[in-house]
Length: 640
Image (cartoon, rainbow, N blue to C red; front, side, top):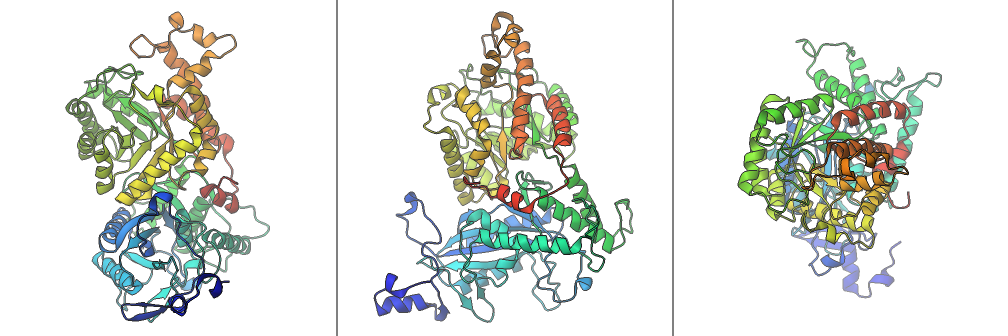
């Protein structure tokens, strides 16, 4: 309980605590926690500004959902204030808490929603002005607020959830058109989960509970709903739960666990690893219930002209979710350089050869083809010019985009903005920067301004100097802090959290011991990173693996390499060394998938890795889900 005597000794301070007068309006303000938002020591000198927590949602189908949401985010930054924090992206089921009809009357053909939450620092001290601005942004994006408009079909839905004044007091407002905190905040998982990404220990001003505890309460309500809906004698599976015949659906978006997504482009929303099983289960159950409600089945033809418009996207999503592997997605390496340590000259200045190799990797199971035109081989002393790198990369990217279906993601492995600009103009989906903007800070600005997905890797120095910089007091903590700082910088520049991937940088400015320590403690590392960011591991054919091979008792693998040399003197691997490292790399692949916390594995040998994972997926298949365990995996802490 707040005690006046402990924090305020003057009558003026007392009135400041009781009422906030803003632009002629009187709002009750109740102090519940001092310092709800924490500032780092570097932020202490900045003048404090009011803070608005804003939820964003849309359920227009297809690619428009994401483009509308990101356009709205740009409008919020332009018209309300600077972006201080951003949640992950979530796909959620429709919520019927604003539809007071019986369940039997609910429209289940409503498209799934995309949801996110942002925290914005603003110069506007009046939450009513914030609300009016949000409604104007909604209207500019096609929101219809007329009496005849459907309440659950919305081009854009922007809600002011919480508003903190200059003293970090969360304001409580109750006017005709604004209630703070948002009246349905505590009951909506599709809002609480993204809010938990930003600040899990944020205290709800009226519920007096943290966001995390409110989610746990909702998870108990979810389990109760599932128990009531499932026949006690039936054996159930996650993909198709036997339903209570008296109810058309089991869970709506308020209690269902939303699916956390990485937007690799506007077409594909990949499920982020770690705690995904219950969310996918809830989504698949919903799809089955919708199809059953409207008399449709798995065998309905998406090309049937009589198929309802809502059914096609649901069937596509079902196939996508059932096809998603538990194991990491594979990024196949395509170096179009003369001097890469592994495959230099194989695909250099030969678009047809590069295209054949890309097709082969796609057929073998690659989800991403990573095209690189600059070697990071430490033996290479001369840096390739920007012009030469563009000449190497762009023709290959153009050919890939022209010849390969859109489901294959094209990544450009570059440290320089002009190359990224040229490659994305040619059709690349994603930018993979091994320097995380250290070589060319303008690359970060380009990615943020254009909304391109970006891989940020931890490293130090250049390929030639990085070995001398491999000095750490705590490699896990230092890598985590670097990647966290980079993430926060990119978000404040305007790149949403759902467009970022973090690469731990194995072998870059790290000794073999450092790299193996990172692999051993991947789960620990993930607890120190912002929640929900996909993790990429690039171990393939790197030098640190050789140290483990060389430590074999009888050194059989080492003897297979002529002269016991790993390379040919110019930094290029011998065939025997590459083969040994590929086999050894499968152990890393197994380890990376062990805790289901690695999203992308960057490899040269796609086929063997994919075959390995196909067996591993069968071994780890589990039809049961545990929502509490999934929640802990989604929001890991160092104590869990």
